[in-house]
Length: 325
Image (cartoon, rainbow, N blue to C red; front, side, top):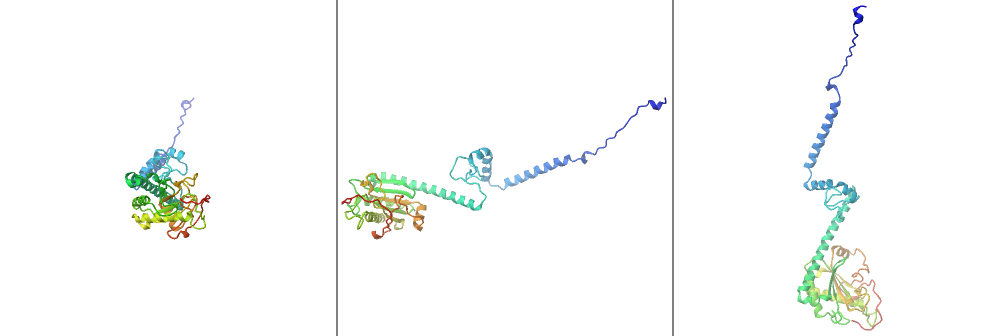
């Protein structure tokens, strides 16, 4: 054999590959880097153009986003927070905002929130006036002796002050509208306090169920209650109250009782003053909503003038009798 047949056969396989620069992996990494930088600079721009209060709202929201989503619901959110669903107290119902993209709905929500806040402030003022009146009654010697006859509470119309009869201390002469001297003193003192607030006043007169012997055909409890209300109005003005503060004078006869179980109880004979809230004052001024008999001071209206002009809405039929308190 020749020597060539003894030589090993060597096969060389050359693998051709491009340089790293010719691959595509770096492009993906670079794209991710550019995207991250763009997001970073966008975030910096947004933070730089956002108010501090908005930043606090965003921070509060992201502290507990799951809690807001689970407990708040679709209408969750505090109107004091920039983010719907934000705020410190997630159980708070007052001042809540509703998620909406409709501009009209947003405007309605804003108006409702403003109205609710106004009503809260007004109620707070009326409560403050109530406290002042109660304090004045305790510190004023003239009023203190009649404190059992002065009832003060807050109703849907405003702050109500009722001056009631006692068995041995009536406010008016028997069956008439002439006022006793101590009733005049009470109205003068109360009028001074009420004159310090801008709210207007509604005034109403009430009687018990004891009818006149002539019945309802001539002078009756309706006329008597209206005359007593107007007599009270005159004394308030005489005591220093501005005349324009009185918006309504109401005669209710025996329609609304304080003691419905005993219609002849002296406590049913009373004068009621209401320091009107803004909503009720506006409704009366524009003649907006109808009067409802269920409201203690909206059954019959007698704007200062002849008693025959009184508007009768409803009253309870008096029991048979001939005397009149």
